[in-house]
Image (cartoon, rainbow, N blue to C red; front, side, top):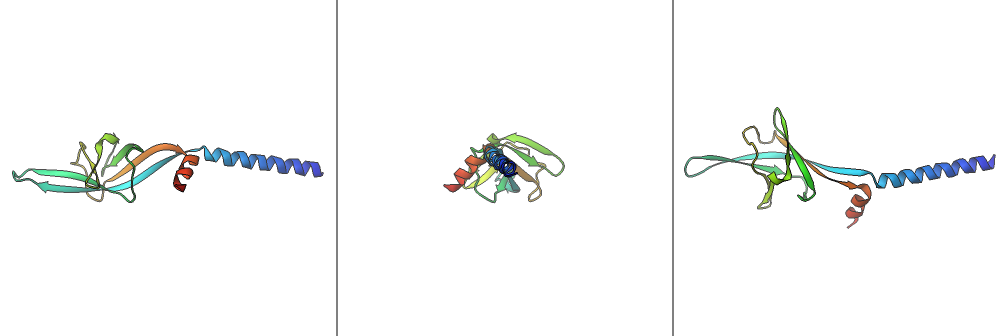
Length: 126
């Protein structure tokens, strides 16, 4: 009877250990939900230019972002990161259809590169 319970205990420990190790190599994707602010400016000639600025809640590393999604009022659009530009400490959207964007209604979801949980935990220690 003792050998059977010892074998069962060993099997449970081995299963738990492989589960924990497996979780460390699980892939994780960072997703940032940001709000768009649309700024209208009038030139000397009377032309109206629009700029879309992302209000971020935390610092975002642009080299980590693979693509992003703009959620308009009625539709959504996936775009590559070449449309995201840092200027003057702000994150701007460039070469994007700004007609359908509304301030504080339209949102942007930034999708980061997949990293393993082990690398994520190791990077957070630094």
